[in-house]
Amino acid sequence: MLFICYEKCSTCRKAQKWLDEHGVSYTLRPIKEENPTAEELKKWQAMSGLPMRRFFNTSGMLYREMQLKDKLTTMTDEEMAALLASDGMLVKRPLLIGEDFVRVGFREKEWEDVL
View (cartoon, rainbow, N blue to C red):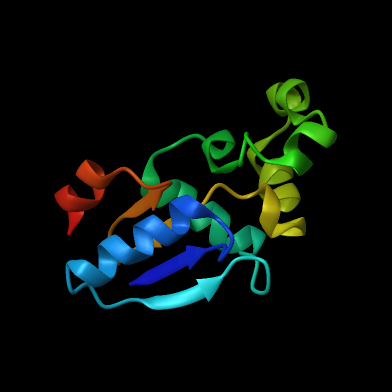
């Protein structure tokens, strides 16, 4: 299982603590240093069943600075994936990727359901 997070994010730290407390083994991948590629994001989006826009960190400073709220409505999934791949701070986190599931963000109940 792959756990992608940002070490300064309180939600990521909470999710990592939850994984550790529940004895879930995972590979940690820091999003700032190892940003997901566009290909990975497209694969994960398909696995998740979520629209690509749900992979954006809408509360992030970069998202607001780039005024993406309005721009995303006219972008294709390909364009969104390329944009997300350009900077890890645009990607909503944490991401938990298993063999047959992807969870975007940390919602304890959702994580319990798949683990």
